Image (cartoon, rainbow, N blue to C red; front, side):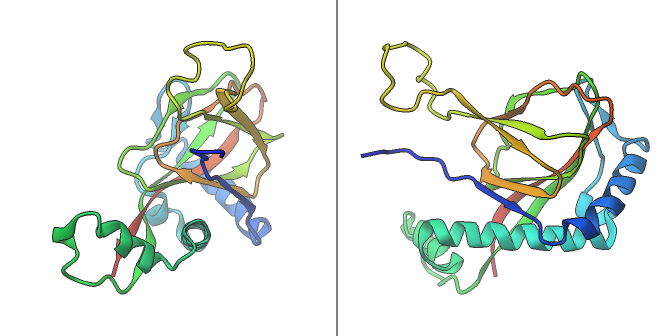
Length: 209
């Protein structure tokens, strides 16, 4: 048996050519207006879904729809049924039947990386799914997904039986979307291109109707 697999969705936005150019212009403007400068990257302030205009609204709706289908494909059941079954673990919360569940945005922001920037391994607390969409970059956008098993690097047995790769590096291009569990640690390796790399991130959770 192969146990403890971590599901990751990777897909291309069908309307990327329509939204990426105006979004890149908007993110360039927002990166200079009250943006947070962490030293290792710049991050926009406020909710992207509120200040990003129609392109942000369209893209966010699509991201939530993809995340919903992603969850349904993994669980093999509609969101409401999967959500209801998870609540059955706590008997006191089964009083009301959950009839409708959707994926909603709890936080959204844009990141801008310049030459020399990087982001150390981190995860997003209290988040069901993390989503990252790549808007603009002079080349590929690399992201590291870290092995979530904390003890795999404790000892080198000489022969790997459990895929102790420690991290998987994906090379994405503008227009691609990644979705993965909020608890999965991820990182951005050192970015070396002269032109900036722009991406948008969402914290997603299930919202019962």
